[in-house]
Image 1 (cartoon, rainbow, N blue to C red):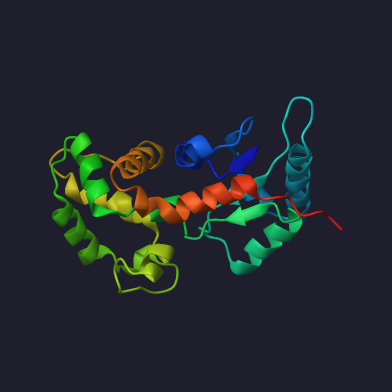
Image 2: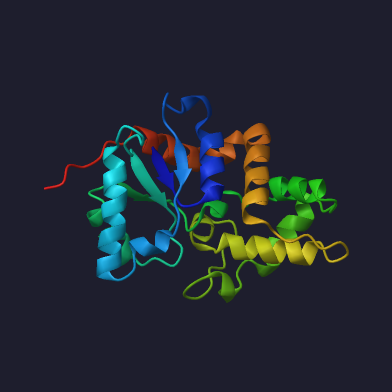
Amino acid sequence: MLWVEGPTEEICFLLLAGRLLPAATAIVGMVNTGDLESRRARRSLAWEVYERLSKGSALVPPAVAFSFDREDRTETQIQDMKRCSSGLAHFLPRLTYENFLLDEEAISAVLDSCGIAKSPQEVKAWIETHGANRKYFPAGSVRDIFSEKWLETVHAPKLLKDLFDDLSVDAPVRFDKVKHSVALTEWLIEHKPEYLKEIREYVVGLLQVQPTERT
């Protein structure tokens, strides 16, 4: 069992794994992941539940790993979760899953499927105009749009929400985190699979990872 942050990752990680998904392995979205970072007692209880799940039973297979995004988590919290999980907790290389989907061609295609005709150039122009706004970053702005650092740290879900709102004024289409993230992933897998290389390698790595023994 690979436990992931939520329904978006549950669907998209399965798409990314494809035929590489080991037999008898399931990818399942967690519920209330915030409980894993809350007060010590609740956090301990939550990890105890997931720890028991990780060992498996007659009804539930053992966990190979837990995958979380980095959104709203400090480095201290990340390291704490890794320790509490005995090495089973892993974190996306970028802030959120949507950070891997910021391709202007893919976004243009998904907008078009929603009845919004915007070219890749128009999408890219919008991102270049608004992508350095401080509201998309926890501590100041990153001005090198589409740079590696920008792709890692920009709050992609907020950015995509505003992009969809602004580019669909005449016929409003709100960004749906699950629906549109899945559509973007499917388009990229079909048309630009190399764009997803980093996240695909992360997912495949999780499926092969071995738990760390508790000492």
